[in-house]
Image 1 (spheres, chains in turn purple, green):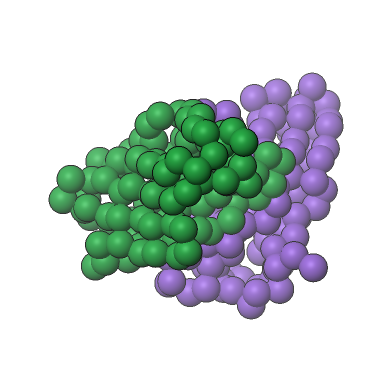
Image 2 (tube, chains in turn brown, purple; image 1 turned 120 degrees about the vertical axis):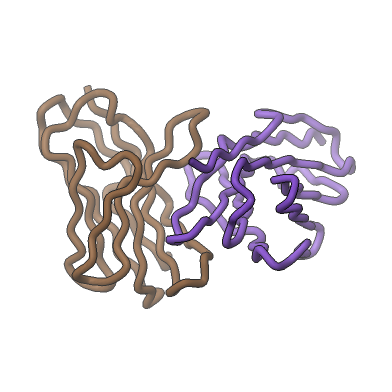
Length: 112
Length: 111
């Protein structure tokens, strides 16, 4: 089983719908991240969390929210999806302060 | 603001040739630099992590160098194989442990 699991792997939705992407990890890491990948732009940080009660905005947090329900779970929500949020979304974990990230396999979201 | 650039965006080589992938960054005050491999439709797999105090890291056929003063890292893959075909991304970690990624280099190794 994967250490970092993302669900769903693929989702097609319509403009205005609420969408939740979920991430769970079995690595026991404190730190979790959500990134977005667009062609030619690399990955950009949306939100990150260093602990259960800790939530921090990344460089492109507008239109997104997150919830860290437990050490192992970090979910990303789009309250009202829009077409330019069509992208590949990655969850990642990091063992405290090592600087080495481990990624899930991604969730491909298409907003029509 | 840290900016990370990878040139070229795409590279095609015959099998057996050595691969040289470049990554440049604008702010030399980094914590570490990480190279990843991404296969189509897949997540990112960590290849090598170089701490700011290190000059290079090696793993099998892979060698990554780091020159902070010039803002550059190079990933060398010796004796390339078709299985090395993938997109390679570098990411720079600055204070606060947030990564800034380059746009990636898409590599095709032809049999």
